[in-house]
Every structure is written in C-alpha cells, then in structure tokens.
Length: 231
Image 1: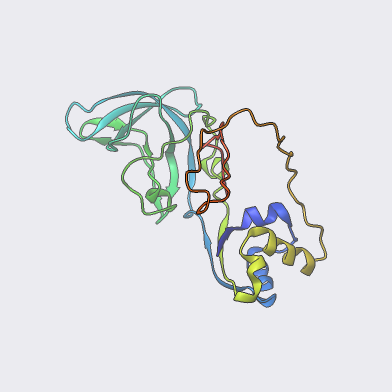
Image 2 (image 1 turned 90 degrees about the vertical axis):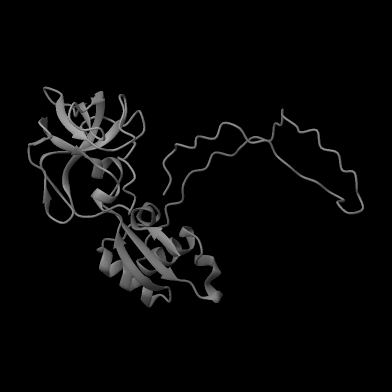
C-alpha cells in the first residue's frame, strides 16, 4: 500500500524525520518497501497565468506567450506545448530556477523570439513521466505562489507491505494508529459533520423479479466537487 507521509502526519506527527519514521513502521511489522519523494529537486517555479498566447512567427509548433507571475511586468515565454492557451494557470520556471537534473533556466531567444522562462510539464518537475503538455492548474491557483507549496510537493510516498493478519492497516487510519501508539501520541481524527437523513430525491426503480432480488437499495448523490484536493 502507498500513502503520503504528509497525510499520515495529519493524523499523528511524531518529532522524527522520514527515515526514522520508515524504520519505526517497519519495526512495528509493516515492512516499508520504499520511500520516494513525490517530485524531483527543483526551485524557482511559481504559479502563473497565460495572459496572451499567439502563434510564433517563425515556427509552426511554437507559441509566444505573455505570462503573469505576480511581478512588475508580464514575462515573454516561448512554449511548444499543444495545450498552452490564454487564461490557463500554469507552473512557470522563472529565470534562475533550477529544475531536476541541474537544468538551469536562463533568458534565451527561440527562433528569434525572447523567452524569459519555461512553462513546465509534470515530467520536467520530476512528478511523473507525463510530458504530453504543460501542467494545467485550477483557475483559482494563486499567482506567484511557489509551486512546491501550492501542490504540497515537499512530501514522500511511503510504500508498505501489509500482511494478511494486518488488514486494519490497509487504510491510513490503521497505520496512523500504530505510529501514535509507538510514539505515545494522541491520534488526531478528522471532524466529520453528520449528514442528515432527509431524502428529497428518489429514483423510479421497479423490482420485476422479487424472488431473485428481494431488496434493492440506492442513493442519489449530488454536489460532488471533483476538483477538491485529495491525498
């Protein structure tokens, strides 16, 4: 099973580093198979907004953009991603940024047009292998915010082997409970507001073969925010 270290620490946060935490979990009987950072090592990448996006005059597959990163002026950045468009919130590596692989961002000219940074894909930040296009951030992503902070990238993925006798640890609460006991700390459980039982919506269901289906239950679910942050 894989889980976020930051998520675990929301439940219980012992004053030990990642290596000590992994060793503690292993000694508790939940063998840690690996601890991997969720992103590569980089800095100087912030949230920006593509204010203008036009065709490059000298290259069919490039676009010339003006990007707002919260500074005194808009940045001119040449981009080749097919999903680059006006109004998009993006991850912008500004001049002086260093990306995974010690790749330094400098001012340059691409086919005659100035470029003062780079609009990044997930692969360029070491988050995944996806290089099909630049990262598309939510429309309310705060411009100028460090992308590591906004996406909570200073985190590790911990993978454990769960034995058949520890099915209680197939969820984050089971692992957190063990860590809390080992460190003699309280378990911080989330406050969940009870959902009322008032039911206004129903579905017109008819059971035509009650001998085969003696009981049928269902529920109408609405108002799901698919863009809400998840672990």
